[in-house]
Length: 447
Ligand code: SAH
Ligand code: SF4
Ligand code: F3S
Image (cartoon, rainbow, N blue to C red; front, side):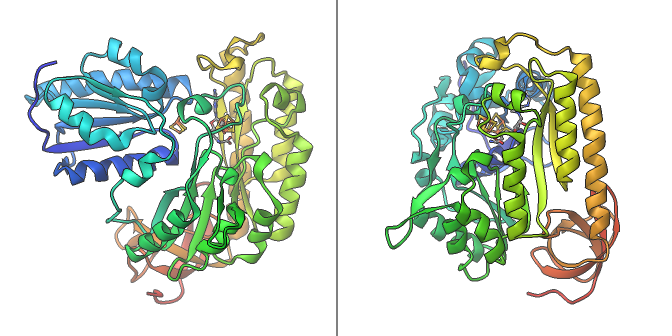
């Protein structure tokens, strides 16, 4: 590598889950502290951070085509941008990236990105640097305080996964389950609210596995943390994602009925409706235990909107087993869902299982599943028409005078009126589409 000039501008591109988006924002803040500014829209940056996702093959391959594109565009603009690969592909394939992509000067894993400034100093000197250590929680203490905050903010409270579903790379890319301390989280929430946050979404690969000790030294779970955060003045809404059916305890379920600030929405991935497939996936629940769990949540909070994740075409999945997934979908009536074709991931047990399913069979099953999920999502939105609810205004809409925000059930709502970003306003839901609802503002903004 030749020596490079110190970068003046940067761009962070994040792929994958919300935690990656959160990490991407943290990296942008770290770079900002180094005096590097975000590149203007449409301009080539001096430093590009690709914050990658390894969950499915397509997502992981994208990193190499992106590197090629960045180098080419940089050359056209007369510069040689520094490239850092961060995120889960960096963790899983760091060495391979270094070998395959000479244009990359930094590889940094999801638990090591607080060291990005040091790595950058090396890269400027012409040395390549790679850091995929997993020092568990050290990162959070080393990150700068957040200054610019969206009204709907995210906070990572838990990271990593010990569940080892047989198809999934996350336990390898994010490491073992760790929980950030209770007191750090309560004080971070206070600071975020002071900086303008009205809603906080608590993030974790298995957020419901969070545990900590409260100020009285008593051990608490996610429900206890939510109850503590609900006492933070000025915080109006709390959400959390993603949970695993195995870690949902009584207190968390009860919190859904007792804590007004906890929004009526639950993302609880199921993956399949077939018990044989669930077992082969190493999911610790059955279709029935999952449905019973949902019943308990609904008993605590009858208007709960449900969301899930699904995989079609897991090795050996028969047509009858896929039909079990459709039947489960039918009986739940999801308000939202994410569905994927199974993608064999290197190093995971499922990748070498017999009976891998043909791509065209997966395509066809995914289409049928998504048609059912779309139908239910539209039905859920249509059933909301006529409701009066609070909407948190997050940004301007495409049309003149239009605003976009989220309902308590995480639906996108657009409406017009004299409001501002960060306002919590009362809206009558008036029309429904599959992706969003139209509303009518019925009250001036509550400051
Ligand atoms: N921790 C969360 C989700 C992590 S990944 C949970 O356990 O629910 C997000 C989703 O990606 C998963 O829920 C699963 O539906 C999907 N996914 C994970 N690995 C996959 C693979 N190899 N192929 C296809 N989809 C996958
Ligand atoms: Fe992956 Fe399963 Fe862990 Fe979710 S619970 S991150 S799907 S291993
Ligand atoms: Fe992807 Fe890593 Fe998130 S693999 S889904 S970015 S935890």
